[in-house]
Image (cartoon, rainbow, N blue to C red; front, side, top):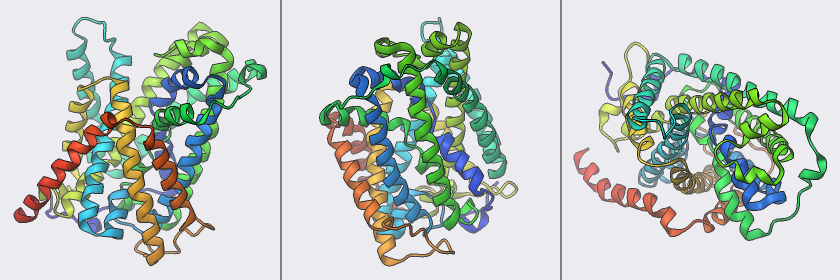
Length: 432
């Protein structure tokens, strides 16, 4: 069914700036914002807005770093491709392993939330029914993505716009009921702020997923910086407004609404019927995230196989649809397994640690690429003042500070996977 080995030249550059922007927004707005306002409000109270601003500031400098790298490296693989180009195949291999791990954990977290929303865990036979629902959803998305990157990208764009409608309505209508006295921020202290930001960052990450199809993006030197900066600005303002409405509606009781805080706020500030709309909006948001991830993340698996670190069959390009079909199918199967292995909370924090570790490698790679003036992507690289040098340094410091608040147990899964990857590397070299 496929031509082997796969090569980026066989892929189609079909993703433009607007579609990429929507893809970044979709990859960012998943399940987190529907759940995390209660957790952040419970931890920091009136100091919660500072956590959003810290996460936004961290993601700004991280995104600037990725804009630098993405405008210089055009091959498929996202951060893996940046690290491999900057530091060679061995370091790139570990970045690729970490990238696939973090993506599977993140989408597994969101998919777990989606299944729990659609199938109540208290329902008889809930586990089996949840597996069936998840399998059908994933199989449908995989079919669309295998049939072409344009179909997959357009589907993601439509779902992104659809899932934002309930949230936009919640913000626009809810702002009329905002009590300014209820949202006056107070400084929460550096230690609780750091620990809470480590959790909240889950609602902001996702830009790396949208950048994986580098060889399928039109004019990446221009599209990548514009898309990720526009998306980050939109998402940050949106999140702050959502939290503002939620805390104004629920006050101190926001922290008690751990399952569906936005639905509870909508019921209070709008009408009881809006609670159901927000619940289904959350399900649609999670579906959109899963769809976007299944479009983008399999490209990292394809890239590792293309470069000889995974079986070559995974680099196969479908002769008719021109997509890495087997990488998509295998990745989707792993997502189904991980989704059914834990709870939302358990998967989220482990996912954050893996993603931030990957981000750190990407920021260091951006420094190296800018210093060597690598220009694989064609056109003029992204050179906003300070973006090539200052932004990656500040981003790295932010990431180290956030990871400092994680526990050793939260690093455990990442450590085991990277250790296994280290053992497998020489074996793979002998088999290549």
